[in-house]
Length: 382
Ligand code: SF4
Image 1: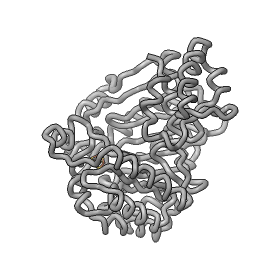
Image 2: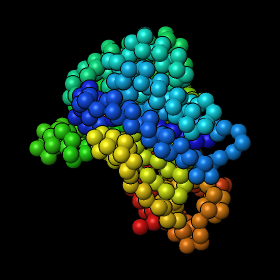
Image 3: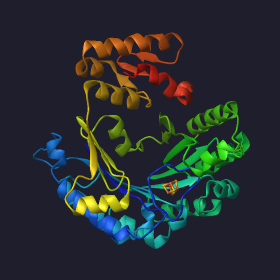
Image 4: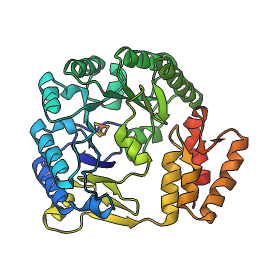
């Protein structure tokens, strides 16, 4: 399995908490899309060089994210996706996801996505309360969010993911319960739920520095996390990664491949690629990206990964999933020094029940996932 990610770095406006690279200016939409087509041409041997060339076309997933992909006309998304499949010589994607903002969703837009082979959509809802959405500087209303899911179902999409955020300013467990009840009543197949994180250089970061962001206490955030786990289980969604919940058969194939160290290519400004030996980070600025791609110059930073980097990548991503890391894989892939380091540190956490070892599988139990990063940091080779 190989993954193809197309990054659309345009948003109609910037949300108050968002630290992703995107721009609200539409001036460079056409040049950026042209440069992305050109980037694919320049990197057409990427998977062959990653050792993924075979007689039969590779199985693949395709993910168009952002930014806000639904800011682009469907013809542009179709041109990019067709080019990706043709250029990288992969089989038609088993999973083809497009991220949508609720206020962009119309029956006609959804039909165009269906026509181009999209079989999974991810809707950035975040909350169903209008006052939350206004504080977050989202453009849609709670009603639009509900309607967007219903329209997608009516258009025939049977694999819909919704994003929600908990731990928002002014949010208590009652409001969070309402958001969860609403999403489960919509009967979606997948839920991505994130604890709000405040990044210093965002408007939320500024408000926090000025003490003007009334965030819930960490005990309240923990209570919201517990509610999320309980209600997801009660509604038949498995908690398969820290922020990901899904019905059986609807785990994200694209993200699961990332977490299982499969190679992926990221196309577009600020996109990342990984081939098992190197990581590539595209320049995070549309103008510079377009200039460098079109003039044949380097448009990315290349990082050669050491064994320690690969170990860190595997441990960091694996321990954030329900299936954890594999003892056999660790022993087969890494030298004694790294394996001893892993077990010396993991065993300390076993005593505290922060880590469980079950046959080949080493994982963090769900009731510790809210603090998983503080556990994982002890296992990272520094
Ligand atoms: S729509 Fe998404 S990518 Fe764009 S600013 Fe908001 S959170 Fe960030």
